[in-house]
Image (tube, rainbow, N blue to C red; front, top):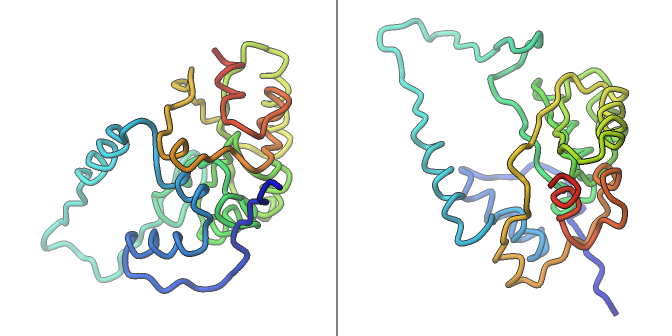
Length: 215
């Protein structure tokens, strides 16, 4: 009998000091296969590590002898006023981490006061994500170009109907990555992906549907 994937259900405050603490806490509540997918990358993780190294070299340089009594991180971007210059990037399948999936993420991002970007590989529909964000919080949509212009039109119209204010185009996903951690864990995708099913039917066991339809 196939084991049913059970994401976390607990809600509440998390006591952590740094990101490493948060990752360790996540291993306690996310099933091993799902955690491996979230925390890992392709191949031997060379690009993963290089991206992390590059990010850590984007330094925030303090301005000496400046007035910092009342610092303000508020910024404007694309006609929106954001609490901080931070935007939620498109991240696949939040349902691997918690049963509320993108609904919880969109709600949290809206409460923080910035832009949420919905992934084509979301575990929820755009309607659910939009509603969770309060219907007024700014949201973007990550889009994979298909060979079928009819599919492209339908998906873009769906994003427009659900209030997407911008399209984030993924142009470098012609093939799926060689995800060695997933292979070691015997991980096959356990959750439905209602948005990406518009690209190709029968999605669920692998993450290759968009790659195949967009090549």
